[in-house]
Length: 159
Image (cartoon, rainbow, N blue to C red; front, side, top):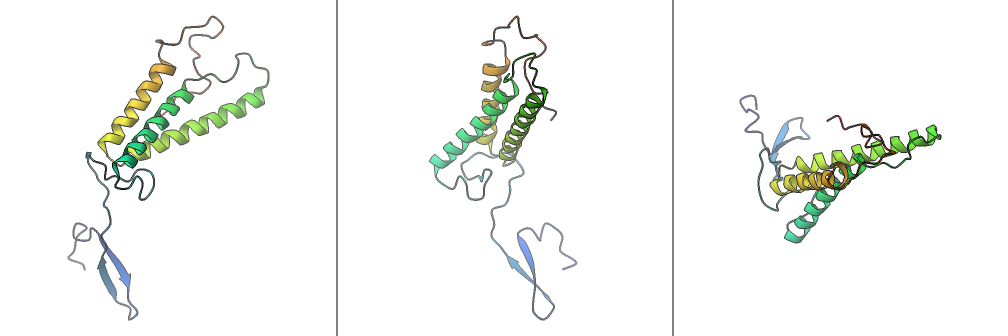
């Protein structure tokens, strides 16, 4: 045991035996990728999902795209009127939106941590399209009532 390094222990599990000794068993588990790879054999967010079917993998990519798109939509949206007098209500709404945005952003981050190239591209595409539609000036005309510097109710993400 002392001569084995971590490379030899990869995929091995230690179990105590009834006589006080140690028993090593080899478990065949799916190992986590540490470099980007292409293919539909990835587990995204949940154990066993999307499985081995290509259709479920495409569905997983769509879900990651939508999560990233929603992060941008929430980040650049104005849900409250400027000059609102209900500060407590406005503060609670901002807090809930911030919590939702951070939670969705973490789900996207965890999905990207599968190191699957398709998942990465789906997340980047979702963030990009979301920013194009909600954050850029392409579709948003500046309003005279909203100051140019204040484009969202939420502070910028600090990742």
